[in-house]
Length: 191
Length: 191
Image (cartoon, rainbow over all chains, first blue to last red; front, side, top):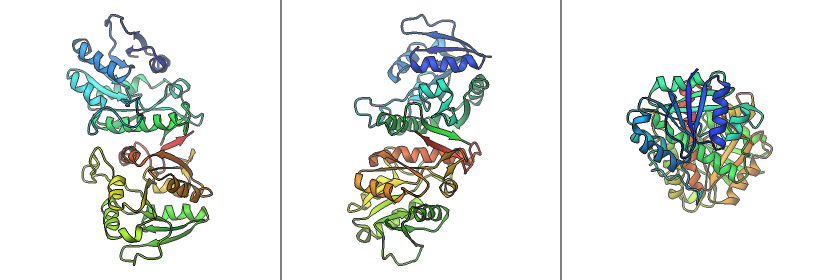
């Protein structure tokens, strides 16, 4: 059982909260304008990329020692044709640079809100959360919190792999936006 | 029915040949050292990255007008921690630059040989070939050749998306190499 604080109550924040609640964790939310206090050991930034950067910058002390989960897909939403982060970096790397005393993990950016809610990709496969980060204990803490949640967990490697997870999320979103895939479908992780 | 020439008779070349044969196409192979002649309208470079570059450089005239399919995953196989192509480019973009008179399509780099052979990812989902390219007619020709092949086809967008397909293939290979996923599994595309 972990105490988990989620910044953001949008579709993703709510779906992630639901998953963690089923996992037996204590979940609280911080919405825009709420005081940043009583943070759990795992903090999920379930907000858009720019907001995640702002939260990181403004709360370095409060987030020190925490497992900070970056879920963003930093698309250029004007063009839907590129990411706004440098090609050799990632949103997660940028957030980690802003939070040197936190344990930053990239996760939940490869799952649509609907597939988290249903725990299924296209009714065919269990939803899997892929996570990348440099702190193995932090990834294990996240994996443990998801054990009974209904979604599977895969360790995708070091934080450097966030770049590939963000490419994966980007490609999946472009295919859903073109209706090649549904927002209830996508890329399933099959062992 | 298309005439398809495959450079390379390794695991991937053979699996791709099998898929196209089931699709009712006429398949021929060119192995290392064979003369480059009688090329079909679709030419698949089922060879490692450096060999694909060499074939492209040496056969610009022969490949002119052809649909040239790049299947490579340009990993640094010493480190398994990065791609050897520039972060803002792709192997497919490099091959396209060498072949200005060909229609280069990125495809088959997101499917392992075993999932092409079985047409299934982890016995759970149909295998899907994702393709990126700037010539819609070339992608349609590839899709048509795969219609009865037992694998599904998804248009992943412009050749620029080859970068994301290569990230996808890279991530999938790192997870299989770590035995997080099996080489008969991987990322399935579910609509």
